[in-house]
Amino acid sequence: MASPQSSEHALSRMKVTMYDFDYSNAAVDVAWVDMQNYKTFTAVVFRSVGTGSITAFSLLANAQSNGGGTDVTIKTHAIGSAPDAVGDYIVLSCTAEEIAQEAADAGVTGARYVSASLTLVTATDEAVVTYILCEPRFASTGLTADYIS
Image (cartoon, rainbow, N blue to C red; front, side, top):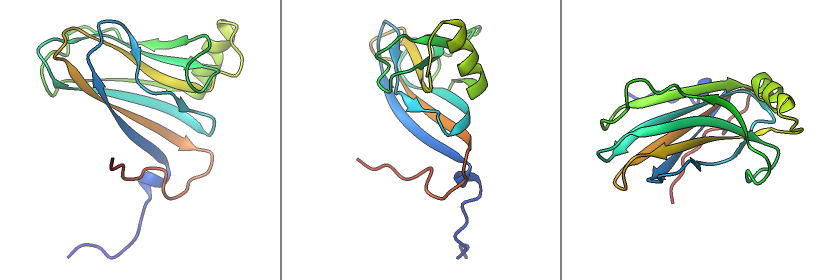
């Protein structure tokens, strides 16, 4: 029997979103999200389709919600073994403190928006990118919700 309890312990402390990412032979920002009320950000890139690989993966910060200002590179994945098989995945994570420090070092103020930036090899390549924002200022239900289009 399934539990009748309505518990959201883990999901009240993290916000998880997923994005479909299609081929681009140049670095493309996946989606900009606001870190204002979170302490950590993690992006997981899962190879879902294609015969190529992921050649570049970075975390960027920006003061503008659409990434229209100056991008600040927070971290770059040192891709050793190429994630070239369907099912391969790579991960990058950063903290709000790292974002603030790297932005200050770059002379950018108010950089609270983050995005993963990816480059794939071939036109048939696709990936699913999962964003996980953790340690919210205030835990609450509904941080992670179903998304049906």
